[in-house]
Image 1 (cartoon, one colour):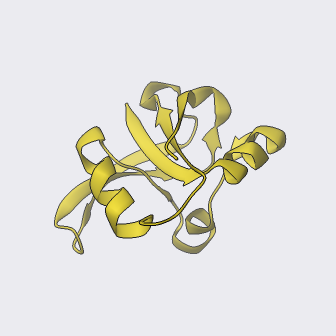
Image 2: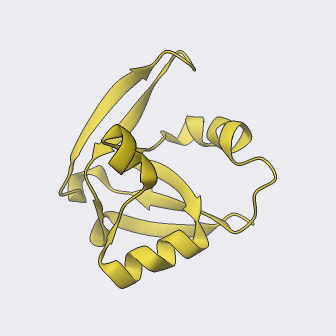
Length: 98
């Protein structure tokens, strides 16, 4: 499984639209995701003090978009990136974080 942190309202929009997309998909060409051990660091770096967050658990086998694990020089780690929208049936769990 891989994970994506987002705001509850963005997940609700995705459910209404039939797929999940992010600003990074439009700007960088992919959606940032994490392995389980990377989630805490992502929360600390990018979401400190933010409210209304959810963690999407994504089954890579169900993705209709391409998944590539790529090196991040800023964190010196490899992260999963999804090159396209996330189809809703690939999201197998949504966990309220705060």
